[in-house]
Structure formats: structure tokens, C-alpha cells
Length: 478
Image (tube, rainbow, N blue to C red):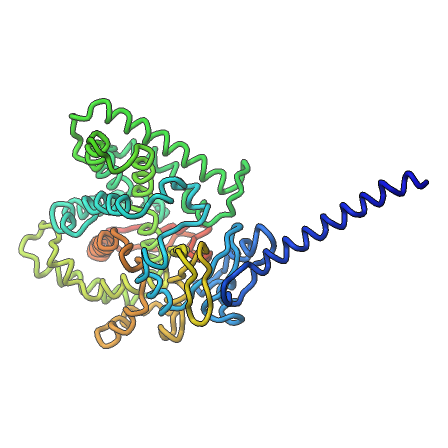
């Protein structure tokens, strides 16, 4: 009996040590170290944090409960943990502007591990300084202001016109899928020289990317994240093979962005590596259509439900047609800049239907804000959606009201308006998005009418999704 008591005593000691260590670990998780006072909030359960609450969908255009409950309990700045990472969430417009202004000083661009896995951890981590300027210069070549004012404007108008004509020949279309195809066909040609057939084949692998960004990063067959990563592998394989082929014949020109990438990789001191170039092109292809397609889908829903807005929009664009010298002339830059009410609609679409889940930064040092400390190395998540739907900043925020953006109110509203981020990392494709939306609305209201067929119910999981899609029938105007 005495011999048995010794092992039991040892096991008891080990058990006590393990339990003590676990309790200490849980305590440290719930009370992260900080040289100051952390913002209020909960770190949730160890490892998973409050991830499941964050991804809980809300059947409304309003701010999801994850934000609303914490806003009421803790205020506009609070701490949490998402997918194992400590995060400070900012729903405060003034703090958001401060964070954007301190890019490279107190904060740097960063992404959650989910995004890193999808778009390339090595590439995202090195996306700073000279590489940041390199990618922006690549994007500006096709999506920058100078190119938009030139032949690309006519090219975009032709793509929109031919796409809507094809849609009108069908009994119905799922609008987000149709718009995604339209944009991807165009940008795949501009970026990597793909024709429509090859572009559509590549696009199939991008379908799950956006769902992957707002899914729990569980890499298990059958999960959304797993499907997303399988799509990423196929995209990487296609682009890697394409780049290999281009590098084997660098003197052959194709008139696309990949020509510029090949020139850099063939130079004596290339800015990027082949891996970074592939990741950057994959990200540009995704960015070119993901947010615009979602935004225009939301726009179609808002317009369908607001006939007075459609009437005012149609009047503006019919006036443009009446003033145009040639009946068959394409839209001009001056005409685009004259679309006052259209610009108000675009502001309202991107305010109510903000499609970005969040904008992330990483603190480079301990940062003091609003009496709290954001520890060095923590993620900061800026939520434009929560600012855009704040009733103290935007009256009756859930109402789709383009007239709120008239001149008397515009300057005050724009101060708290950030659909394309801010600071030195303001989205390079912002003007491209606006031009494409304007061209789409111009062609839509001057040539077509439409009716809902099915779908249209919305969920908000930070961004807006249509679980059953949104199907419409497009009909030529008589």
C-alpha cells in the first residue's frame, strides 16, 4: 500500500502543476501584458477568442450585434481576440483618421493570418516601402487617373454596354456573378492578357476568396476556408506557369501589365521576386472585381427599392445624352465629372453598403489613444461600416438617401466618410471603381429597365452578403 501511495502522490503533484499552469495561461490570455491601460473589452476564450461572435451574421443592414453590443458596453474603442490574435477595434471616426495619418510612424499596414494565408504571408509581410510603391505603380498603370481619362474610359464603356446587352437576352441573371464576370474579363485582359474563355476559367477559382476572408481559418476538407485555399493553389499554379512562359520569351510583348513585371524581373536589380510578383498579380486580380461587384449588387437592390432615386438618376443621364453632339458618341471624361447626382448615389451606396470587412493596421510601438494604450505588435481593426452607420454622424443612417450628400451637408459628411481607406494607402483603385459604377448606372438607366426575379435578402457579416443571390431580369427600354 505504501508503494502505491508514492506514485499517487507524484501524480497528484503533476496534476496540481498542470492545473496551475493552465490557470496561469488562461489568466495571461484574459489579461494581456500592457505598459499602461488596455481598452475595455474581453479576450474571449483561449485561442478562439471572440471569433465565432464576430462571424455571427446579422439579418439586417444595421451594424452587426458583435459591434453594437460592445459599442454599448465598452464604447467606440475596445479590445478583443480574433482567430488567436489580440485586436483593438476602432469604431471611432477621429481615431481612424489618426491611425491613417500615422502610417509608417506608429502603425503599418497589416492583415490577419487568414488574409496572409490567402494572399501570401511572405508577400504581405514585406509589402512596405519600395515594394508598396512598386505595387501601386503597377496598379496605377491601368487603374490610375491618367489611364482612366484616356482610351480606357471608352474601353470600359464598351465592355459595360456589351455586357448589359448580353444580360438582356437572358431570362434572368444573378447580378453579382454577372458583374464579377464582366469586370474580371476586362481586368484579366489588362493585367495578364487572358481572353474571355481563359478569364472565366481562372475566375472560378476566385469565387470562394471573399468567403474565405470572412471564414474561420480551419483548414479541413469541406470548410469554406479549405475551399478558398484550394482555389488559391489553382490560381497560383496558373500564374506561375504563365510567368514562366513569359520569362522564357521576354522580348515578346503582349501589351499587358505582366510585360512590366517581366521587364523588372529581367533587370539587373529587380524590385520584386517571382513569388512576390505572382502574389501581387493574384491580389490585383481579386481586388479589381471583389468590392465593385458587391457594391453594384447592393446598388441594384437599393435602386429597385427606391423609384424616386431611379427617376432622378434617369433624368440626369438623359440630360447628358441630349447635350451630346453625336448620337453614337461614347461617354467623355467631362460628362463623367458632370454626374452630380450619380456621385451622390455612389457615396450613399458605399456608405450604407460598405463591403469591406475592415481595414487592419499593426502598432509599431506602444500607442496612447483616448487614455488607453495599444501595445506594440497588436492589430488594430478600423471599421468604416460602424462609422458610416453611426446615427450621430449620419442622420437616419439605414435610409438610402442620396440627397444627404448635397452641397450644404457634403463637407461635414465627407469628414467621416472612408469607403476607400485613407492616408498614404488610400485605395489606388478608388477612381476606377467610381468610373465603372458611373458607367454602369449610365448605361442601365438610359437603355434598360429591370425587375426582381428572386433573392435579394441580405445578411451583414461586417460586409453585406446575399445568401440566395440576387436575380433580376433586364429588359430593353422601349
